[in-house]
Image 1 (cartoon, rainbow, N blue to C red):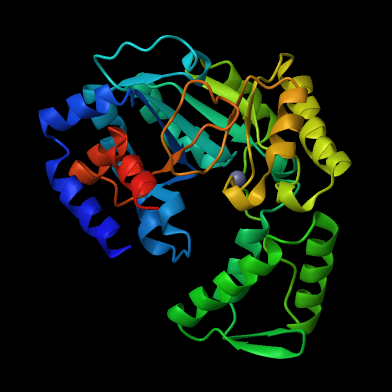
Image 2: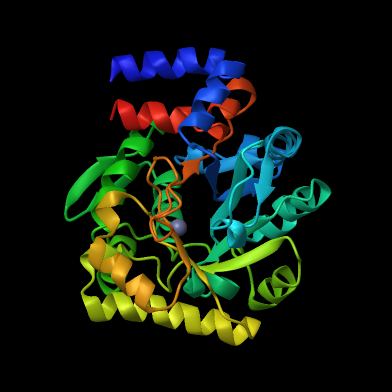
Length: 333
Ligand SMILES: [Zn+2]
């Protein structure tokens, strides 16, 4: 583990090296898929305390990253991922998960400015802010309370460090709950902590936003299930429904076929080969995961992605974009 981190650091410093690039070309690492979630205004970014810093970038950093990609790489649409690659410039696919409103307000103008294609994977229950993501609900509760009662146990959430610790504890529990159990969990939490229901901020895209976005040539829309449940704890019928309901809603709104899928959470613990078979049977052409691995053209139903955060600039960003960071991760896993 230490060696991996050491190599990562060294790689950050040498990743501009030409020979290294040639070596990566030799390994046929020609496409890197990036995973974004939210792009916040700089003021919001600085004000908000979040536990998920690696999932959020500020608008100014996002612009720097996209500018760097446009100048040094070949940003392509996910629709072109199966096409033969031109090895002169590494191809970059930009993806966003969940369907946040800031993708439209903050990311789109920058993507348009630099003519960078991207895909946004929509969780359809979040559309029009009908539902609210559980990871935001639990963080809101922890953030606004000095102490949390859960199952008659008290959790000290009086400092930022303790808040983060509790957040991580609850996330590990909730990710293993089906939607109906999540509802009971939150109902009990609200009751035990005498707190109000969670504030419904308008964080997600509306159906109208979606229609607008889909008319943009640079933007592709993909499916990210209906309730964003961990598909590995659902049975075959439940998994099929989670995917089919979402695909049907998107196709009804956009009046066209939805060809691309993104597994909720996307780590190896959240899907199986059965999940992949169901995704294929629903007619999706590609599927992305959150596995930190190298892209192989013959496996477009398990595409690995690299999370990009606010600290990914300069040589650190370059190391991720040329695929060297993934290679190190693969070799020293
Ligand atoms: Zn997601």
